[in-house]
Structure formats: C-alpha cells, structure tokens
Image (cartoon, rainbow, N blue to C red; front, side, top):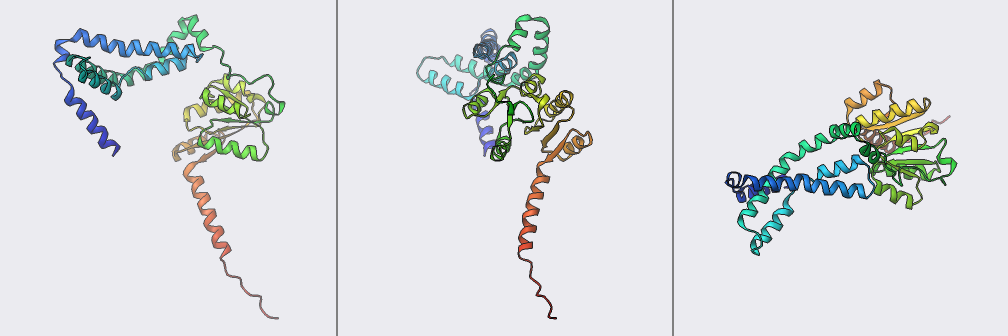
Length: 294
C-alpha cells in the first residue's frame, strides 16, 4: 500500500507539473532551486551550529533539508486557491521540488568529502568541529566505578536498552556512548552515565574511559563503525573484550575470522533461543521410566 500511494502521489505531482516553465522561466526556476538548496541548507546549518552541534552534524542536517516535499505542494495549492500565488508560481514550486529531490542524494554523498576539505583549510571549521558539547564529556562528579572496570555500551536503541536494563538488574556499572545528544540528555536525567558522539571517533571512547574498561559492547548495526570502535578499543586497551552484533551471516563470518571479538548473529541467536525452549519443553514431558522390581 505504501508503494502504491507513493506511485499515485508522484504521478499526481507529475500531472500538475507544466514542463514549459523550464523554457519560459529558466532564471526564475534557478532562483527558486538556489533558495531551496542553498538558502534553506544554510539556515539549517546556522541553526544547528547555534544549538552547539558540531560541524559534521550541521552539514548532515543541511544536506537533509536541501529539498522540499509534499507539504510545499499543499501550501502552494492553498496559495493558488486563495489567489495569493499565480499558476506560474505553482509550476515553479513543483519543478523546484522535483529538481531538489533528484539532487539531494548527491548532496548527501558530498557531505563527507566537503567536511574533510574544509577541515584541512579552515581554522573556524576545525573549531566548530571540536566545539564543546556539554554532553560530550562525563561530569567531574562521575563515580569511580564507572571509570574503571566498567562496560562501555555503544548505542541505546531497542537492543541497547535491553542490555542496559540487564546490567542495571545485576548491578554492573556501565557507560553509554550514544550519537543522539537528545537521548544522552534523557539518559543523564535518569541517572545513567552517558556521553554523546559517534563512538567510531576515538575521542568518544576516550571520554567513556575505554582504556580502563572491562568490556566494549557494540549494540549498533554499523559494520564499518564497529570495526573502527574495536580497533580503537584494542589500541587503547589490549586486554578489553569486544562484544558486537551483526545481521548478516557473511559479515559474522568475516568478523569472527578477523578475531575482532565475540560476534552475535541475530538469526543464529534466535534459533538457539527457540531450540532451547523446544528442548526444555520436551524434556519436561519425557516419560518417567519406573524402577524395576528387585
């Protein structure tokens, strides 16, 4: 149904689009596209920087907002019906939306190389990338049990929350490294020791005191990031035990062959759990053989 509605949506948009606008008003069209891609992106980046997010986050947000979608069609249609927008304006909005949507994947792919380029050439960019985040460091009041012999838990999604709950139940100290700053803020309000940032960045694991940790649990499905985390952990703490997850059987074999750590493959662990349950039930129902008479 979702795919069907997507097809209907884009077909209906295409029926509203007047291709003649490309020839009749090319300058107007380029101006609207520039406002969407550059003006909107710049505003988003400035807001992200103003809220003290690092440069990488600001660039990602800017790229993600460098387009317009169905809500713009609703507003343009409303403006057209109220006489606030000429028919030509509606065509410009539609054409600009289609162009910005088509260009957006290329903008996303350009974020990483542009970030590397600007960091090499701009002191301001480097300062913005290293800017202080109140949640990027552990508070000075953090208890010592969270700084030595602790578990560093990367990711606090559906899997990470379950692992954290089990650690809490057994009284095992842990530090959460989570990329979402809002989630880190919520975790700290709950009294959970957490640090914000991408754990593939060595600085984040250093803030989580990985050098003195007993175990690194990577509850994130990012295979490239997991390898970087494991390498950083082993470099800073050669005796640390790495625990990671994967959704691919081929990937699990590669990770095990590379001896990165203890690898848990989702389907494999699910099969083990279901098999264990079945065997236990049948073991309970096994008939009791009476003892033979002497």
